Image 1 (tube, one colour):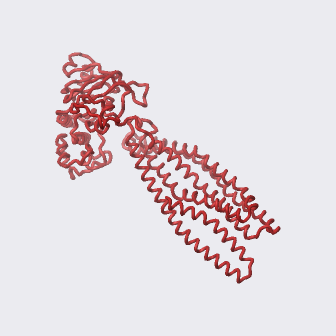
Image 2: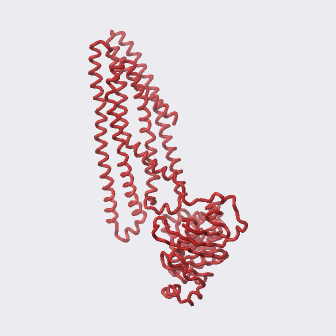
Image 3: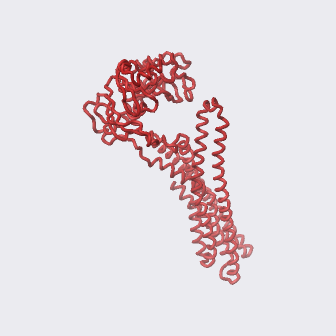
Length: 565
């Protein structure tokens, strides 16, 4: 960056030097033929030498600025993505932080920043010495004519300021573009759903409508920019008219040689023209500044959920105890502060036991698991594993290393089956024997080995090549490969048919053996063998007991069970 900046400054300072040589050419024409030839020959050699030097410095300028842009973009993308991965789940629930909009910031905003660190920056850096050296050269030859020539300069700076005022429109344009990108991303990502519902026309109309808004903002900005740019290009010609006219009177009065008029006009007015030319890059610089501001909002943001400071130094004596205790938990989601999910919630899960959470949708079952994982933190209350408070005594890494989860719709990556299973434990290199052992425990080994490439089979984008039961069993194997102390099952069989449910349920029963297990289920037949069943309603436990005990009560659980028979 230093080499590029120095090269740009040299090129900028060399331009007024060309004006001096150019003026000397005009001055030599007034001499006799022989003297004129000798003078022009020397001046041409000077032009050649300066041209070679500028060629070399120009290469250095372009290469190092572009290299700096690539390095900066790479570093900022890495930093931004790292900070995105550190944010709490509640932050991603906000509409402005959707995956499509964040992807746009990673690509477009950082790309705009990279584009600005190239020709735009080099032109601006060149402009400064060009103007300053041009003023110095002009003042050296004639203070009076230089001051007259500078009359047009304020108008050039005014044009630059007027162009810079378009920042607000640039922000609106970028925000509108994010919305358009979000619509396109959602439609393409869920193309099967869009096609099955015959909503292609609606999505196209929605996309075009939003893009029309972007086009409207862009047209207004372009119209204003065209007006300002036209004015800026006219100003140097006004300067030439004033300089040559006033300089002509000075030559007539023999106050200044003719060649000095050429030197002053070329040195100073070219500097003004360069300032006007930089208006071309003002939108790029403005866009880069706006993008940088949005990017650094992400980089500077600290996650609301982080590891406690004392987690690495403080250890309780009974760290092998994996009892789970929810104590007086109150919670609502950050994006829905008016909807209370859990109220004074209490629950104890004894180590090695399986506790099932059942109840109607929205009663807080999944929330209990998310709070244990610290995807969210409660407003009030405490959650303990053993005698450790998960918010004060355990780091996020240690906490989540104790847990493994199998969800209703497991997410598998576009990698091989072996790699997907190995992702279950990223703290070490998982061996192939461990992968196969986890697959056998999850009852997945047999169907995997029947695939053409076995464990090296790529599951494909969105795992479209696997059935629901197969995906679920791979997810169970992934959960087991880290040998978790606590297993979390969030409606792991609710989306499966009866036959697949039986196979997966056998794998789950095998997986939870000897582990503390928290199970969420809508199908009550899958939790009848749980050590205890909690019925949730309105954010609290209203019934607690075994399957038979709850049936004998004749309450909510009985009605739910009878409705499924």
